[in-house]
Length: 303
Image (cartoon, rainbow, N blue to C red; front, side, top):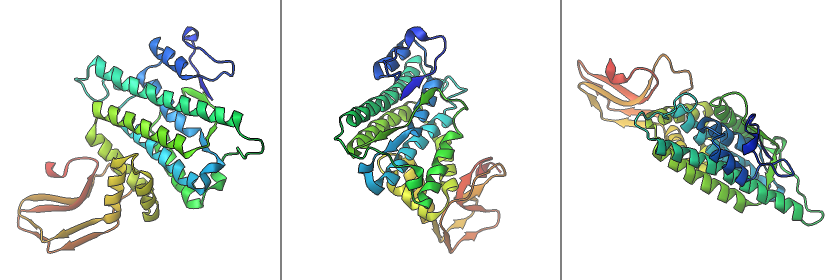
């Protein structure tokens, strides 16, 4: 159930008899200017927290949960990359008012998607056959490794969000895979749009590397490759690279060369990469070589 906590905007808040907020109410709030882009972002992140999965999903509910986590993580990665809470220009000083409004509209549409999906689930619950099991899976039904990965992904997302919730929510359940598929597909399209408008590629790369490093173990990374399909291509590619490691053959450094990992003193996360293989590496006098990735701090070539 969506209940927006918006003091001093009662005129914009239209509640149904069940005290939930439908999409028309969300749009009305937007038109009244009651929701800024940072609050809309926070509300979108909140929405992911309260979805549960009905028994129709079977054991697949675990990977379905992780797929939702991928979408949420991608959203928070973007928000962190554009400094959404402190930079009204979203990391682009040449950003126009129209472009910022488009990003706000995309976040609004994500809220509407969740509201619509919740409404469909509620209607199904009301019309379900007598005796149908409408209970939802919980964390206690998950495999231990899945629980650990679920907690890691949620923790990464939550730490990028300012404390305090914009939405006051109660949990609700998805009952059909088709509803999840539609929700994810439409959310991904909207995430594509906001990343196109405000890409912040360097920051997003840094943060996705932190995510892969935090997840760490190979089995969990392999799971991420599967569940991120069609949801988060950047995370999927980063994790694939981490699993594969690096292979270097017959490289000669006459000057400065970078072909692998570099960690600055301000890097606080883990190291990723399954392995490194080197063959025929030569550094000539006056040369300098780095075989791996660069994480945080001063650029390797600035020395």
